[in-house]
Length: 130
Image 1: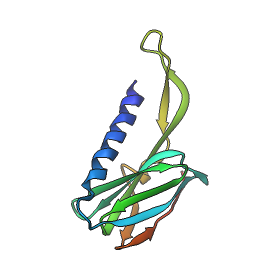
Image 2: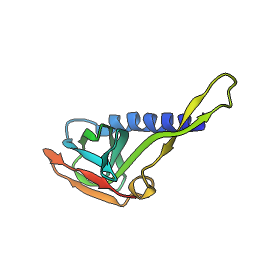
Image 3: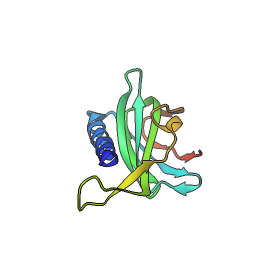
Image 4: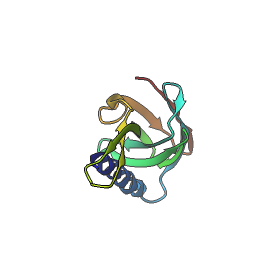
């Protein structure tokens, strides 16, 4: 159940930050995200722009994403989870799959990824390693 709650929290954060794009001063950012050479099946990418870290998020699906992001220097955070093969059986009669966050912290909570977003269209792809 805990993993489900963590996953739900990430979805809520992503949904909330998508709304931060404001008016019309955004650029389109598209790209691919791979981890150890494989496309990230389901995940989230967030661009935190400027000193205040204003967030702009998008869903990663089958290794691809498209986001509307305010131009400027950004820290990029990428998250994704996958089934761990374990199950939560704390609720009698329920067997809930437990996911695991597999993208290293250096790409999300302690991100070292930085990009400059320019007005117009931007192509930003990420090949993540362990």
